[in-house]
Length: 523
Image (cartoon, rainbow, N blue to C red; front, side, top):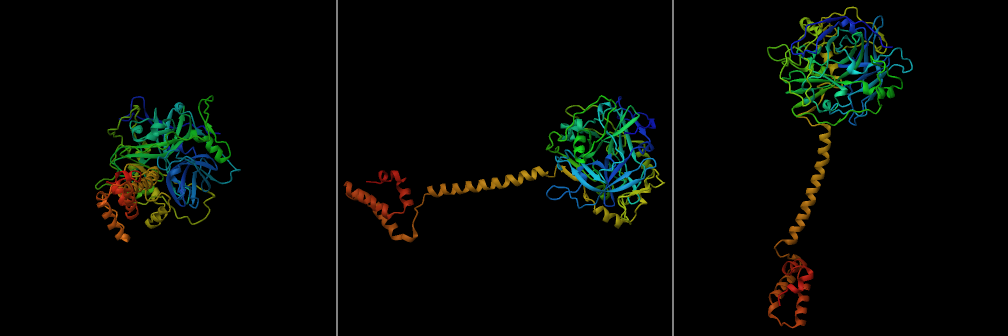
């Protein structure tokens, strides 16, 4: 059953740029540690893909974090793992994934239905479960979390970053930047805030998961990061335009997950009478919605792209202050439907990390660990030292070459999957590959018939080079046609002579079609 805790909340002053009905508050990182969380790990490399746990043997992850074969199926030859942070006296663990179920309607171009279920352990030995938050209007506040590991091989965790907001999550610009969001607002959350990336102190990264708080005394995980829309750039790092980050709500996928796991997926709503009639076949509306012109969409593991980014000359941070959560707002495109409740703030934990983090763009964070044993399936102990200072992350592995090799093993290494302005989507490629051959064939057929039409009507005599004598005789007979006797029998014999001596094309050219040939011959 879902655990209830009293959250240690500190009310802070309203942040500049927030509407009067919104307030920012802090939840201590210790309070977040009262809830199990998980990260998607590829081999010994942690990714930016935070998970939402279903129970001790299954959890949700963004489908864009997985690797796929050329036929579109999940590549199960990759060493997928799930790192779970324990609570209380419970040990943390890193578990090998035994099965992957990507949503059948996942669209890698638009990131519609960007969700998958990972399985590990014995499905018949479930030791605990975790509730999925429902009834979004009843949330008292929303927690956006970013969990990171200080050591993958030791299954030890760093202090998480938390952004807590009261009120609506709607932000001006979210609808304008995503047609998919505009068609599925009930099943997405959208904010502009980010937190510092552990892969590069010059980069910001979106939060990984979202928790809904009910009456400030109970919390349930409700969404996971899906994708980001970026203006004036192709990467989160270095973009000078506005950025909007979208989170997939888990509620409509509960029935599908239950079908995939073969067991109940528990949910929570503050109102005991609340009921949601879900379906295992749920899919988003307008899932083929094209990207907005001028917007690039990114998703998946964002750490490789951040690690490769070099900060601007003379600067130590991304130039996009608004997306960095610096509290400075920029001009944001207004939505047609006027999403009026905007938020622009950063969490206190994030600010503390900025002050204490000594890493720079050249640092290798604890994205990867060289494991010296094969016991990743067993529980691992949490490290005792879990300081706020993110330099502890870098102590896990400072070997550039080893870190680079492990980063290369990531299925999304070299950049995130993206679609948008300047990049053809999969649907566009399929359309082009289908239309171009059809148009080409149609043009060739048209040219063929045009040539036949021209050949039939060309104004030249069709000489037969193999029968030059008959050609000359043909001319002589026709030239003398009118000089001969006009007796009917003579004319008929002359006509037959012409037909016998002249090539058909020549007769047709001189006298017209076969049916009118005799009437057109001069007397």
